[in-house]
Picture (cartoon, one colour):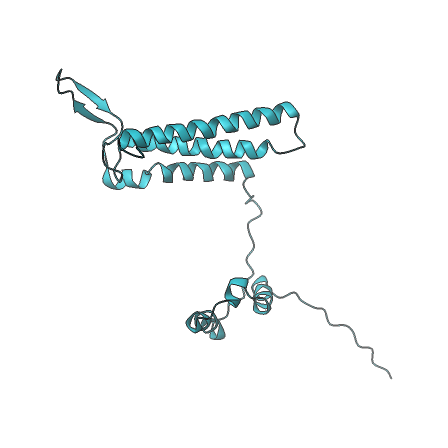
Length: 187
């Protein structure tokens, strides 16, 4: 009697094994040029006895990916917070705005920029500088959107003009801020 062999059902390995198998054969182009034996040992030795765990995690079905605009907004807000010096403001707790006394009249007038110190700032100074950096970044994004041939010509011209204006305004205002902060800068 002849025995028919049934084909065995193949199971897919977990993603961690697929990534390990794919990553083992291909190496990074930057690693091939490295002559450092310590770097080679550091890359090979831990993975000779460590193996990734076999886990089969599933995301909850109610969890949805955020929209691209939400991610962009969060990244832009984080960028604004970082370039504004929010961490510096929290740690050092500078005043929101400074003041100085006029030598001739004796009146006290507000000062927005902390003069003479490159590594110090008032809160309003950091926020205004951060806004100028974000304005320049949005201008670059608008200029990139102006290159899309699928948009109407008037929309592309609007994007390009607003983008160029935003970049020019951001650059000029940032240079003005630096000249106010450091009077003899680039002169």
